[in-house]
Length: 185
Image (cartoon, rainbow, N blue to C red; front, side, top):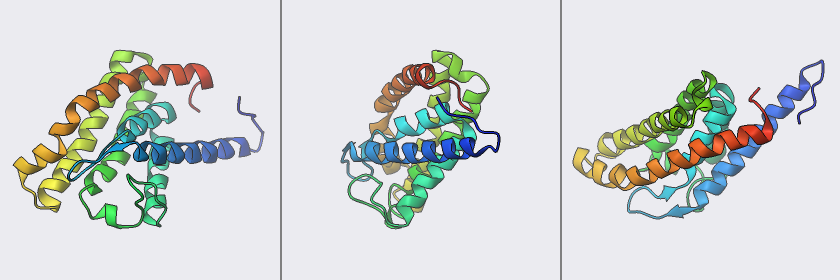
């Protein structure tokens, strides 16, 4: 599907296209959201984990950092019509940081064969979700000073069932994506 050139430029072009595609998918997934008091429920975590598993740890992490950079410079890529630095100091800050860690870990495990088994990929994605939720919880509890109990109630509890559903969906999607587009490179 991707042309190969001796000078390696096809690999760079492929990477740029995949990063652009990934950030576009992340933006769309942020717009599908259920507003909650502190942190909206979105499809972003599903896309973060699929990007990590499908792209691998390097390109997955770069894609998430590019997405965060797009938001930081003011593009309205986050949930709602939001861009700029406010999300990096508001209630969602921990989750945003957790996105990069989750893509890294899910991608790293995927590159070691965890994406070849739906069960193991589910576990890898669960670890990614745990990282996202832990970073979000930590920021809400201590950065936003909500305290442990309230941070649990608004930042973890509402997301547990959805995370399990997203893990199952992601673990089923990645093998299908792999069959359509070939192995990661």
